[in-house]
Each structure stands twice: as C-alpha cells, then as structure tokens.
Image (cartoon, rainbow, N blue to C red; front, top):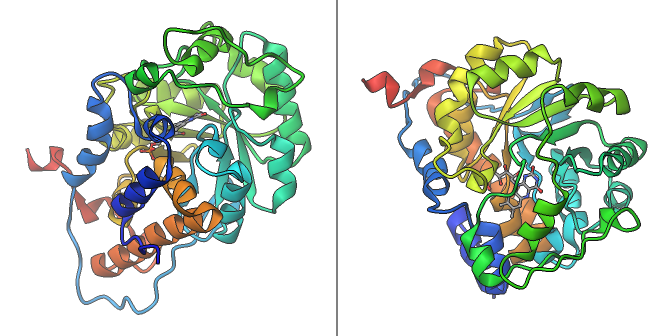
Length: 360
Ligand code: FNR
C-alpha cells in the first residue's frame, strides 16, 4: 500500500520517487546557488507566534474572498508550467482539484493543456498567467482566448524579462515539452545542443522590453482585472497601484529567477504598508505548512499561492494528490488558528506573530 504522506516533505519524497530526475529537478530547482530557494522556506521558521488563550475556538471558519470570489480557504494555486511532466492528465487534474477544494487556480501560459481544455474540464475559478512575448500578437491572442472561455483575471508575471539560470536544467539538458497554447501561433522548436532547451526557448520568445507603460497596452486588449506577479519592493508596489492594477502578488518566482532576491515573507509587510489597503496583496514562495499561511496572513496577505506543493501532489497521486495537498495545508491552518485563538481569518492580526525585526 502506498504510504499516506503526513506533511509536505513526505509529498515531495513521493514526487521524487515518481518522477524521472530531469523532471523532478525542473520542479524543485531554483536559480544559481539556490540561496533564495532555501531562504523562502527558512524565513518562515524565523517568525514565531504570540498565541492567545481562553478564547472560544470551537468553530473555525477559513473562508475568504479574493477579487470578489468566494474561496473555502486562503490557499490558491500558483501558475506553474508543464503539468504533464508531473502527471499525464496535466493541468486538467490540477483544475479539478482546485474545483473540488473551491479555490482559484492560476493557469500558466506555459501549460501542457490548452486554456480551452482546462476551461471545459470543470468549473474551477481560473485566472490566466501571462508572459509577454516579443510577438505581442501571440500574447494578445492568449489573453483574448482566456477571456472568451471564462478566466476571471490576468496575472502578469513581471519578474521574467529573461529566464533565470537554473543549473540543474542546464546539466540535464531540460527539454521543452509540448506547450499546447502555442500550437498554430508560433514554433516551440529550439536548437540547443548545449544546455536547457526550455531556457533557450524562453530567451527566444520573452520580451525584455516590457515596462510599466505596457500595462496600458494590456488593459487595452482585455476587460479582465490585472494582477502583477513579482513585486518585491515598496517602490514597485506603489507603481503597481498607480498604474491601476487590481492586485499584487509578492513573489520571487519560487526562487527561480534572481538568486539572492529576498525571501518573499521578509518583504511582505513593507509591500502591504506601501499599498495601504488600496488593492489586495497576495504572496507566494516557500509555503509548506499551515503555519506559513497564518504568518503570511498576519503580515497582511489576503491569501497565498502554492507552486511546488501542487506539483508534488500531482506527481505523487494526480488530481487526488493535489486535493490532498490543499487539504493538508488547510487542516494545518485550521489547527494553527485554533491554537492561536483565531476563529476566522479576519481575527488573524499582526500581533499574533513576532518577526526577526520585532526582536531587534
Ligand atoms: C513556476 N513559477 C511560474 N510562475 C509563472 O508566473 N509562470 C510559470 O509558468 C511558472 N512556472 C513554474 C514552474 C515551476 C516548476 C515552478 C516551481 C514555479 C513560479 C510559481 O508561480 C510560484 O511563484 C512559485 O512556485 C512559488 O513558490 P513555491 O510555492 O514553489 O515555493
């Protein structure tokens, strides 16, 4: 009988057993020295709780809303590419798990199922993540296809003018899988004998000239709300508010882009303060426990997104695995809230946590 994973590390272990090394390395790896990769997780462990006692915690409510959509918990699915590398059902299995758990899935534009296939597979609330390509017409077509088949928001990933240097992928000569959304729009064939094909492909297609003024262009081609993913400073948070986006995702791309970028949880509070409640702030990077979700909420995030944990669940057990990953984090969050004396998410306050800065 398969072992029942008791925490996210055990899910990761199952994924490792299930996958060829090239794919496992692609899912888990970070950029260069992987300093940020380690810190994304470890920075959470330096935040401690200040729990309250003797409050009636017999009923705990984890529900919330993001951009007006009701979610059963503040745990959303981050966009990650190429789900068929983890499981043959790919993004469709992930979307079904999101629907079952009543949460939002952000579909990567680098998906192995098309935006339409994912849309027609279930009634999950879906956002669409976009990279802007040199071929603006291709980006525009993808956005319009997503809008037509019911995606509710565009998540513009802004931290990837080029792909970060992921050394495991270079060594493994990581292949480019079939990226279904591009069929008939542009070729995904690249000629790279030396290193990661995926990196070569990305460098060829990504538009490094993308800038703040292009938010106007994006708004001109869609009526959907736009979120910017990849904000790490107060300065950029203010710019994002000024250009009129609907939300911010504090993210360092799961430490796959700029190594030595700060762990996301360490910059969340300054971003939240700069935004001043004008738009929702979400966070991803290093969430592996319900306690991590609680800490992010205490420091001002409206919700969090999980990247690798979804891929671990998917690789280990397909749709059911993704569901169990979400449920595991949700159950852990519920326990953390109970033990901290919080009956609902709005009870989670800054005073429930102590950060390294508080201890200075
Ligand atoms: C990603 N991420 C990502 N982000 C994005 O905007 N578009 C994408 O296509 C991808 N692809 C991708 C693939 C893989 C294998 C990983 C691990 C990550 C980044 C992702 O959205 C998110 O920011 C991080 O994964 C969050 O960190 P954790 O939860 O993985 O620690």
